[in-house]
Image (cartoon, rainbow over all chains, first blue to last red; front, side):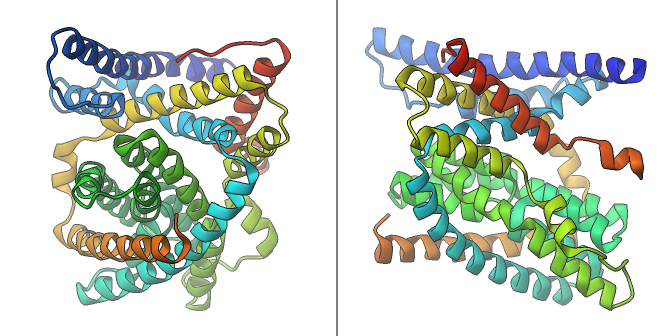
Amino acid sequence: MKEKLRAAFGLIPGILLLIAVGYAGKFLERTINAYAKTHHLVFPNIEYVLWAIVIGLVITNTVGVSRFFASGIRTYEFFLKVGIVFLGSRFLLGDVLRLGGLSLILVAIEITASLLLMTWLGRLFGLNPKLVSLLAVGSGVCGVSAIIATQGAIDAEEEDSTIAIAAILTLGAVALFTFPLIGHVLHLSDKMFGLWAGLGVDNTAEAAATGAMFSDAAGKLAVLVKTCRNATIGFIVLGYAIYWAKQGMAKQIENKGTFLWKKFPKFVLGFLVISILASAKEFDKAQLASLANASRWAFLLTFAGIGLRTDIRAMFKQGARPFLVGAIGEVGIALLTLGLVFGANHFFTL
Amino acid sequence: MEAEKKRISLDTWAVIVALVIAFLVVAINVRIPW
């Protein structure tokens, strides 16, 4: 009990740092916009999302962050999931089913292509086969959580998952800044960009941030699409676990139903519950606004966490070959998903 | 193993916390500004 209390108190400094960095980002956006308005200056509108990430990045990569804050900073994953649940209030169930159905079709194509591409590239570069599985799942499904889930299921080495996570996080950080630029150059609509960010960016936090950097509407859709991708995690991990068990290099899965339930991201259910309640008009206008704001606050802490977690020096320390496989694969996936988005926009009018 | 089974996952905690806040918003009109 004492241990648990100590661990809980240990989270406080890091959470306070997330709040401080996130709020500084929000404050900067507001102050700069107000200054430009009063002085009749034309400044590009830089969203709080970018400020929060950049402030976090600067802190981590200059003065560094003491270990004292580490456990609290890691809670950004928790706030991300809280934010996703609240985001359900901004989607009517009909939209969730329509966009979710379309997303699932695109997600199926994206995952199949990603897994095949990464496996082929991994073999071409002579990577360890289990590391290839981890990279494939990380890029195809949902980044870090998929890698961790697969590592346990296929008995992969800790070192392989560390390498795969480093590669996926590095490429996620690159996508964070390149996707919005490409989106603006190509004049993508909010819906097209949201769909692309949700399909093409691997880690959920980065996908949400990439979408939000483009626009609020794009961020909302990016999270919905990414959530659909996350929902498939159990099936993909199960497939890999069965494959490696057949090779005699991982333990057998006894109960597939229990396995799927354990791997299923429960926040998807929370998102659906809130969306169903919103669609049933259980919330009035003011309550809906409060829930949407709660979602924004939770995402703000997530974006601060992304910046604070990204250590650029550590990224350069990873092996060149896994990074190359990841990078080439990610460029391929980004192009493929962009093509899917244009196709979906043509056939379904997003 | 038993202890592992009893642990509530981060996902589940996130859902519980979000639903409790949603309940407070509805039941006692807690307002969350931005």
